[in-house]
Each structure stands twice: as C-alpha cells, then as structure tokens.
Length: 119
Image (spheres, helix red, strand yellow):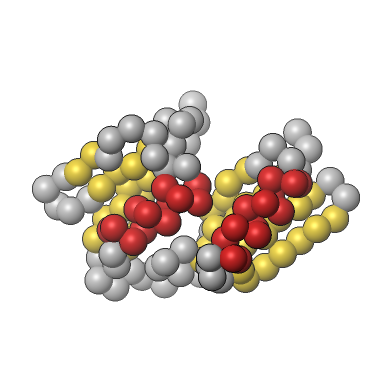
C-alpha cells in the first residue's frame, strides 16, 4: 500500500496546474476534469494531484507541508535555483552532510519541501 493522491483547495485552477506541471512534473497524460471544477493531474509515478477550486483555501498549521524527494543534492540545488529565479518564495533552506532541502510556497501558500537524503 502507498499514498496515491493529494487533494488541494486552490484559488485558481489554471495557475496551480501550471505551477505543479512546470516545477514538479505533473504532466504525465491528460488531466481529469470533473463537474464540480476539480482537475486531477498526474506525475510519471502515477501520483494524482487533485486541484479543487475554492475562493478561500483554509489556513493550515505552520508545520503542515508535503515533499518531493530528489535523487541527489545537486538536483535539490538545481530545483532551488529554478524556483528562486522564477520568483517562487523560498521560506527555508537546509544543507548538511547527508541532507539537503528547501521549502517553497505554491501559489496558494501551501508549503512544499524539496529534499534529498541517502536511502
């Protein structure tokens, strides 16, 4: 058994969809679109991200976040540079032997961690 999808309330479906497609690879196949406005996009590992329109996404506790793992620290650095160059808010960074990570904000303020640590 494994976690297979995440549902997020978002203010602007198109903006959020472009963000997750561009930076996190949610562009594997056509999106599913539903009568309630939800759009489901998928990455190459078949993980589904459900984006549901909501004009006022609720605030989560500061600790709440979700993460994407990278194959090595260089990939973490590459993604950090890309996101920062595009003006995506970077809210935390960690670099130490055997661990590299940063956290950024998506268009609705959700905290995303991008990290690497040895298996």
